[in-house]
Amino acid sequence: MVKYTKKTKLKVIKQYLDGQLGYHRLSVKLGIPAFTIRRWVDAYRLHGDESFERRRDHYPAEFKLLVLQHMWDNGATINQTAAFFNIPHPDSIRTWAKRYDEGGSEALGRIETAVPAMPTRLPPPDDKPVHELTREELLKRVEYLQMEVAVLKKLEALTQAKKAAAQKKRK
Image (cartoon, rainbow, N blue to C red; front, side, top):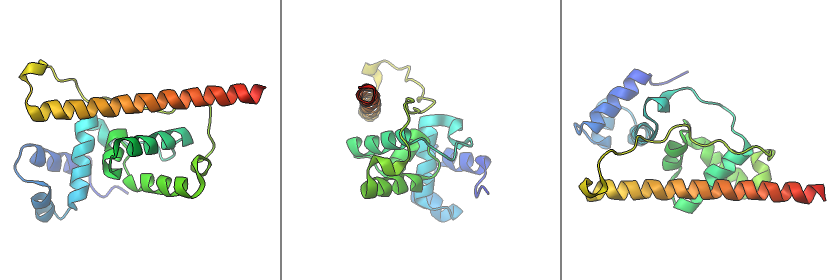
């Protein structure tokens, strides 16, 4: 059962993005935890309306490993990582990390040979020329591009590892 409707989430996000109130004041006003509002806003910034669509309940082990590696490589929080990959329940990532710590990548599930899923939608490109961006906008763009490169590098590393394992298995 969904605790908050899509309409409610969008209303709260709009209030925040319009600068009417910050996370904490919105939290007090609406009785919604501030970290929840922050997670909604982060996901909305990255994925737009798709951030509230129903997603899969099961993720392949490769995807879990990719998510964890992205989080560790970038020093991202669990909530930031959940927003980046559009994972609705950040506690899933916490569980994956605990399982990984206890039993390595095998504890995340069976590793398949398929390529891990990537986020389905990137944020819309900024149409402004670079020289017209503010310092904050430039820093945001750099941070996003660094995360994107890290994810692509990890994807390539996972693909290469799978190919090497397949070749080793054939021999």
